[in-house]
Structures are given as C-alpha cells and as structure tokens.
Image (cartoon, rainbow, N blue to C red; front, top):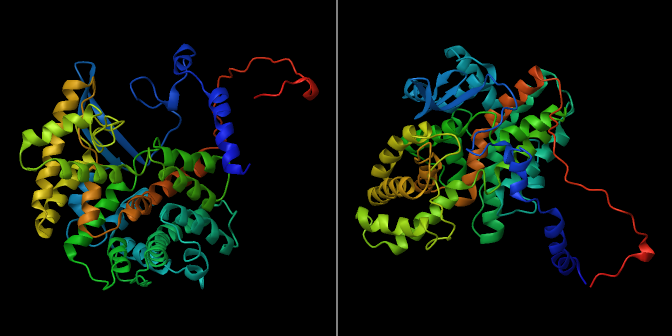
Length: 451
C-alpha cells in the first residue's frame, strides 16, 4: 500500500475523531473564527495603523453606514484625490503606513530612491531560486523566494527596528520581481512560451515597473499604470483583523524573523477564503456570459443571478462572489473609489459591454440578497468584484491576481510587524476549551484489530 492509498483509507478516522460540533461553540460561549454570531471580530489588539468603519450612531443606536477606510487617520478617498496627477500614489501611502505621517516632497523623493535602490536581488537569485521548480501557484513560488533570500541576510535574526525596517523595505521593493519572474518561468517551462526577464527601471513607480516587467515590449499607457497604482493602494492595508495581517502579528509576537513572518502571511493570503475572491468573481462572470444572451437586459441577468443564489447555477454554493463583506455594510469605500477608474479603463479598452454586465449583476445581486437573505447590515459589492475585471483588461494573467494582492498587502504586513515589535511584549497565545475526556489505557497486545 502506497502513502496515497494509506492516507485515503485513514482519512475517515481523522474526520471521525477531529470533528467538533458547531453547537458546542455556542454552548461553551466560544467565538468560532474569533467572530461573534453577527460576524464581528473579537478584540485581540490595538493598532494605530488603519481603521475600518461601517456603522454610525443615530439616536443612540448603531445603524449601517457607508464604509470608511483610514490609513493612519487619513481617508483613502483623500489619499487618492490628493495624489491624482502624481506618479507615486502607492509609494506615498507606503511611506505613510511605515512611518506614520505623510511625506513632504524631499521625503517622498528619498523614499522612492531607496525603493529603487532596493530592487536588486542577490547575484543569480532569479536563476537559482525563482526559475527552479516553477509552479502555477505563484504564491508558493513567492514564499520560497522570501525564505530563500533570508539566507543572504547576515542580520536575519536582528529584531531592532532599523533592521526590520530595512528588511521590510527590501521585500516591498522586490516582491513584484518575485511574482512576475516566477510567472514568466512557469509560463516558459509549462506553456513553452518565450521567457524574458526585464530589469525594473529605477525611474518608474511600482505599478509602472510591474507592467514593464510583465509585458514583452515593456510598454504601457499612463492610464493603465494609474489604474494599477490605485488598485495597489486600495489593497495595501485593511486593519489588523484580517487573517494574513493577524498571522503576521502572531508570528512576530513569537520574535521570529521578518522573512518567516512574511512567508506565513503569504501562506494565509493564498487561501481560498482570503485572497482569491477576485478569481472566483471572474469565473462566475464567465459562467454568466455563457448563459445570459443579452447582457444589457437587467431582467435576464437578474433571473440567472437568482439561480446562482439558489444553488442552481455556477458552482451551486449559493454565493455571488464579490458581493458583501465581513465588515462593510452599505458600501465598501475601496469599491466606490475603484469603480470610477474601472469605468474609465473599460471605455479606453472598448469593454463597455462587459462593464454594463458587471453593473447589472451588481444591482441584481444586491436586490436579490436583501430579499432572500437576512442581511442585517446591508449588502454591497466589495473591491474584489471589479479588481479581477481590471487585471483582465490590463492583460494580467489570473495566476498573478493573488500575488498582486500580496505585492500591495506586504506594506500593511510590514507596518503591523513593526507595531507589534515596538508595542507588544507578549506572545499571542489564545485559549481553547478542551473537550478531551479521560480514557483508560489498553496495552497494545490487548487492543482489537480494527477492520
């Protein structure tokens, strides 16, 4: 019997002995997933880095409101509006999250210079690490690269603020290279396509360099770079309570090194319940396109969305992907900001018909979910509803959708790691209610053979 046959045979034993009834969580007052029965997260820490709100107080009562996202106290809407026409929107917000204040002109120039100088990997690293054992799972490739590059750092375990900041900025700078080069290696060895490794241009922003390194001709339009820049900004940070950021803080609290903490965060983000929502939206939209003849007909679109909600179409899970959020109620501020840029890009790319379909699905899903489900806090599209559509219009392959999320989110992870190191002095150690009962030991000779 080989290991695969053995584990298939033994899996039911795990299912039998590891199953914990959901009713017991309520009986013992345990919040499953660190969330209460309304989805609100259990408080596990304090942070100065960002704030998410979806409610307001009216006449002493908490009522749903349009969502708000603050980076170090600054509304993301203001960051976007105040940075229009300038090249470094993502970089400006990265400075803000890392250092806690907005940069002036000289500070911004110096920070961008440091980022550019840090886009330099060890000699032959691309060949020896990234191009070895290429995988369709680019997140796994990125995780391997993060752990491998730790071997080149003589101060890997130095937890001083200055050293961790150096490591963080270096990883922020080279994450796009980890992702894009890993994709090109995979595309070459698995799809037999031409492989090209373009060096980043020190005079370009992060978004511009991603497009430059990804495309064979290195060319991109100003609008394309601006829209990708905004996407990176909006995915950069979302509070300490999301799974990957909490993972960063848990590993950091154990006083592990920066590379291990970021590798753990990547492993969290790649999970289907966390970073892959935009891919599911794209698959759902492809399914809708193939079953709805007139994309501009709201009634026909609504009828098919109703089938999806009632588990009669698409993956039959009853979910309209990209709709709703664990925190936001009436609106996701990231989606509200992003949608205007999506419209502009769709117009530029001649994808107005697709944009109309997305908007029809959005309206239909919101109305149907309100009618059929008990959504106490409201329902609206989240940022992932449109992000996959944008990446598709930019010619970015689906294998890079979640890695793009990571390229943005590593800034938030780094800020939270620094805050955890500076402010916290205890290892994160949650409590679990044990359901174990005392068993009488039976010697091996007396145990019955199980059929």
